[in-house]
Length: 283
Figure 1 (tube, rainbow, N blue to C red):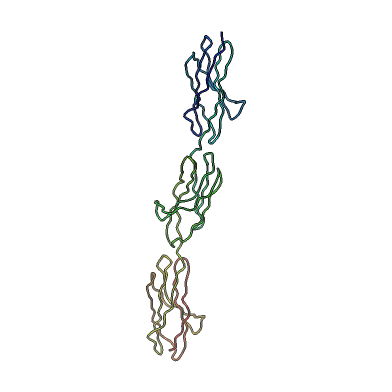
Figure 2: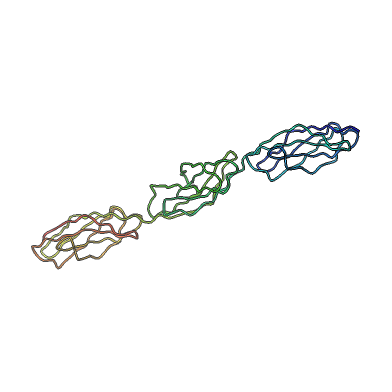
């Protein structure tokens, strides 16, 4: 009875976490042999597959699982009969990266986008965000290199007031790109801006105060005037609801003849109140 001879063939179906090991029993030494593989990251291997009964000229294979992405493994075939065990030459294979996975976190404030790289798939990933007013996004932030467990943060600017934005995280490695779920945030209205226009239709005891709402900050504003004998004002007129570029006026009466008055326009929305410059008129 002779010892068997065996060849270690190339690994096939190599993925990020699985592979198939292959061998050929060249000579069985005169009886059926138990054939399998030793494998691991280094020698000594540390892992042995189940064996199969084979005779001369037959091939044998064993799938292995639980591999790590982007890792090199060593393996060799073996064949055992009553005369002993023979080994094929050592071969290697390297698993590819796995597709990364990401988590999208709530936006911080109204301009800081947050995400976490849950799994880099075995290699550093380029991570960032897609964002826009719809789920078609249309904008992409610069990418940052991240590894598993690291957070991704990007601050975006030039947002419109009182607008809802959608965003999602992405992570790209050599296997492809993974996207986090869609999230959204809404920007608040901006502080409005108003212009105090000259008073008109001046009389001894009345006048017409005028203003222009230059910017409503994204929502309709309540617009009116403050009036008084100095810049402490003291009197507030009724208000009108206006939007950007609309004018507004208030007729005031009960004034004192031959008297100088100060006034200024104001506009209020949910973010606060904006004021025009101080103006004067004399009855």
